[in-house]
Amino acid sequence: MTVFLFFLMGGLTLVGALGVVLAGNPVHSALFLVQTLLSVAVLFLLQDAQLIAAVQVIVYAGAIVVLFIFVIMLLGVDRREALTETLRFQRPIAVALGALVLVEILLLAGHSWATGAKTTSGVPLSGGGDFGNNIQRVARVLFTEFLWPFQLTAVLLVIAVVGSVALARRSGQPVGEGMDDTSDPQEESVS
Amino acid sequence: MSISPLVASLEITPSYYLVLAAALFSIGAVGVLVRRNVLVMFMSVELMLNAVNLTFVAFAKALNDTAGQVLVFFTLVVAAAEVAVGLAIIVAIFRRRRGATADDLTVLKG
Image 1: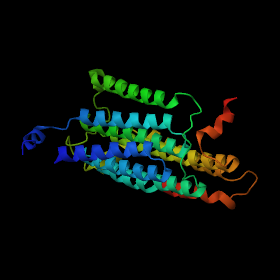
Image 2 (image 1 turned 30 degrees about the vertical axis):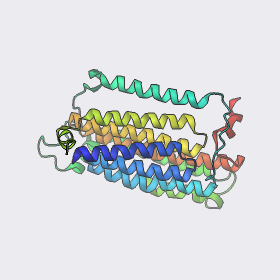
Image 3 (image 1 turned 180 degrees about the horizontal axis):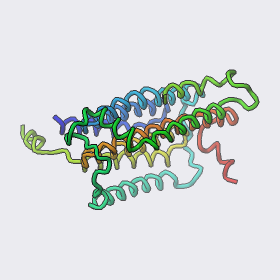
């Protein structure tokens, strides 16, 4: 069953990823992105990452892709892009570089030193004492060892929200008028 | 019937997930390089971030350590912040230049 699910969801992930890159219409790309994200969420579930899978569906598929489609509809850019090449041979070189990246990663992953690290957080993913379920384990690590990075993410989110409001509103226009609606959904999505 | 014993004997090791994540990352990288639409380039960046998340979760499972899953959270936060700021930049560009492709930004090349 696990084997079947892995190959099914892995295939759907790759098909969705290729769809994102190859689809001519940005809306189709966004929908293929949803397919990829949901398939990856199932792959997370297969690896005992229940909380991450739920967050993946809620935040990525629920908020970020909606934001993408929102901007596509707002700007009306859902038309095909021009296929003229402004840089010569850009696309063949890009595909060759992508293949090179793949080969490099596979070579790196083949070495044992890339996978030699041992546990550092002291909270194993399964078993190993009275740590509770997956959510409790993640919370224990997040609020003890990763507390300082966690606080920094709060600063990052504040900066992102303020920055997107400052960028999206017209200069000289007070907040709360005109195009400011574009920055509202993401405040809800990331909180 | 002949294929079922093969499937039954097959075990999904972390290497399978790593190879899948590598393929996903490469597709995302090619997407960033090939596409001219800035929105689709953004979606390709999301693909690459998802590949990294998949790698984190695979290693968390392989090394039996919850820290890998916690790091996925930080990736998610950075991705959300990146999308928020990036789409605001796209909206600002579109308002000035009536186009959202990378070729519209060649004025940046000095």
